[in-house]
Amino acid sequence: MNIDISSLKLPDSAFWNTGDDHDPMSDPIPAKYLTSHFGVLADGPASVSIAQHSALPLFVYFLGSFRQTATRNFPHAAHLVAVDPVLNKIRIASLIERKEGFSPGSPSFPASAQPEGYAVTFQRTDVRGRLHLPWAPGRVISQVIMLDMESNRVETKLIAGTSDFVDPEKERFLAQERAKQDPPAPFPSRQLDAAAAGDPPPAIPEQPGIALSAPRVAVFDGAKPLPLSGSFRLPVFPEELVKPAHGEVNRARHLIQADGATPFAACLAINLVVSASGEETPYTFTLHLPVKSVIDAGGTPSASGTFAIDLRSLPQFPVKDQTLVIRAYAKDWASPAATIGVIARPAK
Image (cartoon, rainbow, N blue to C red; front, top):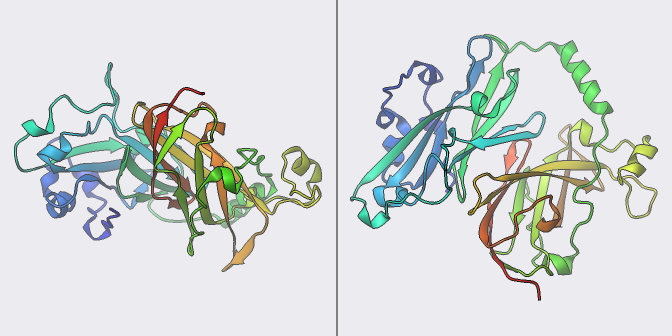
């Protein structure tokens, strides 16, 4: 369920004025959703002055009936994901410091032993501290995930002081530096053909965004690929544009199309986060996807396309009996999760 909490957000001052005795039941989110939502919701400040504060607080609420919430080990099994949409970088860590001997499994109290009624578990965390964020002007989009559950995404602007002053000459210099960079080589180096990918990739989004598609249950015996397909429509950053004049770099990085002479137009980065039911920590991978053309979308370079990869080609990808939940993040956008129940069998 995708919930828009914009009308329920606490004022920015609330995140600094609460003490250890904060009562989450006084917050608007649990007041509205306590009896109607089973899952994780989050709230955080819209802006933070990095000159005045040294932390980026996030309030996280785990809501549901006693019997529902007893099936999940919140907050110990939850993870914090933060995206820098300006640099298209992603960071992930456990929501709280893990205790020694932690297991990702459910708590030992069965749901049947729980009383009737509803509960909210409240957790305050510092996004900067948990993820070692660079404390510099920019934007951060935070989200909490717990295997197949995910919170809403909370965007926070980090400002240098009490104003949004921008030095145009500094910004122009940084833009020029980014424009000089060459994209890395495509990764994975090979994609699946239509027969190996199975189902066709999802339709390309009409608006900027990402979509994923994967078999809901996959039997893996070491022979067949473990396919993940996707589609995207995204703005193209200067460092993602292939520079036709850099022929030697393009050839070395395999940024040349099949004719052996024409360079790709761009190579876009999309970050994957893979949560596994039998693993404590999600895996992260960055795909670099070549595209043949870039268009001008209202003054911003933009590209769209599809991809199909064998998840086994990703380094140390966990292929064993478990359930995988895969999410994609790029710039300001995130995909809905794709879930794969993997059944691993010995190779014949």
